[in-house]
Amino acid sequence: MFHYTVETTKSVDEAVEAIEASLKNHQFGVLWKLDLPAKLQEKGVDFTTPYRVLEVCNPVEAKRVLEQNLLVGYFLPCKIVIYEESGTTKIGLPKPSAMMGVLQDPALEGIAQGVEETLIQAIEAAK
Image (cartoon, rainbow, N blue to C red):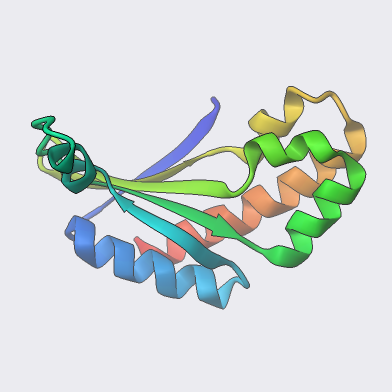
């Protein structure tokens, strides 16, 4: 499976706050936050499902993977999404190991697996 997703009883806004705090505890920062419905509505598109996209980064790990292969930049920063589906809030991410697998570089696969484990821990702590 290319993604990891969990459910939480928190609202989307509460889950965003929780994941931001958890990411910080795991040495990741939020570079950018997108409120997708607000942005689409700003562009005249009616989409009301609560949906947030966070672009997150650990600068040390980013440098490490970029020094290994500059094509990794196509996948950076990592994304975490928080959304509501059928009344349930979900937190998820595309797995870095799946993304890096495209490059078929064994050195990257190990780094990606470590980043993935850390991000999953952060999500689990936030749910």
